[in-house]
Structure formats: C-alpha cells, structure tokens
Length: 127
Image 1: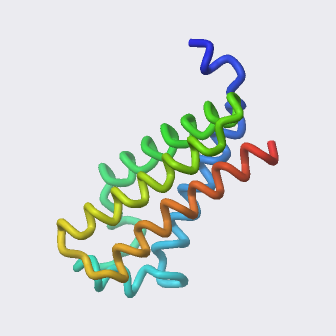
Image 2 (image 1 turned 90 degrees about the vertical axis):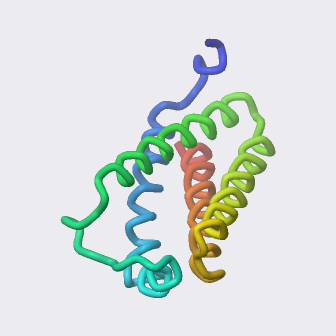
C-alpha cells in the first residue's frame, strides 16, 4: 500500500474528470464525432441516447488510469506512465481494427487515449 501514500488524489480526480469531459468534446460533431461515427458505423445521438454502461465503464477506466498516472507521478516514473498510455492507445486501435472501424475512426480513438494521457500527466504536474 505504500504506492498510494504519496498519490495526489485531487490531481487523480481532476485528471479523470477533465479527461471525461475532453472525451465529450473529442467525439462531438465540433471535433471528430461525425466522421468518427461514420467510420465506426454508429449514429451520433443526443446525450439522452448515450449508452449508460459504456459511459460508466469509460468513467471507471479513466479513474483507474488516472490513478496509475498518479502512482507514477508519486514515484517519479513518468516514462512508465508514457509507456502505459501508448500501450493503451495501441490496444484501442487494435480493437478498432478487429471490429472493422475505418482508419480514421481508429486514429481518433487512439488519439483520444494520447490526449487524455497528456491531460492526466499535465494535471499531476500542475496540482
């Protein structure tokens, strides 16, 4: 449990929340949403149409990843955080390929992972 003693929990929570909000913008029609939806073979809907289980799983995943970033920040292991983020991005792209998303949609998904990784690392550095 020593790994958790120096974790900046405020930064973990803020990083997860900002990353979740960034996902709303990232996948909205303002940025990449429309073309991503076409490449993913899904329809963009209203906020009421959001898949609740997927949104909950995303929130949990972001909190867990932000905790991992917090642990690496507390132990001065930034390279481990970067490797983890790149691994998650590559995995996201590979899953997209298996479900036959187009290249654009896969790059949007992988790009979001890198974006939220940057957000989480930056929040750890700022707070």
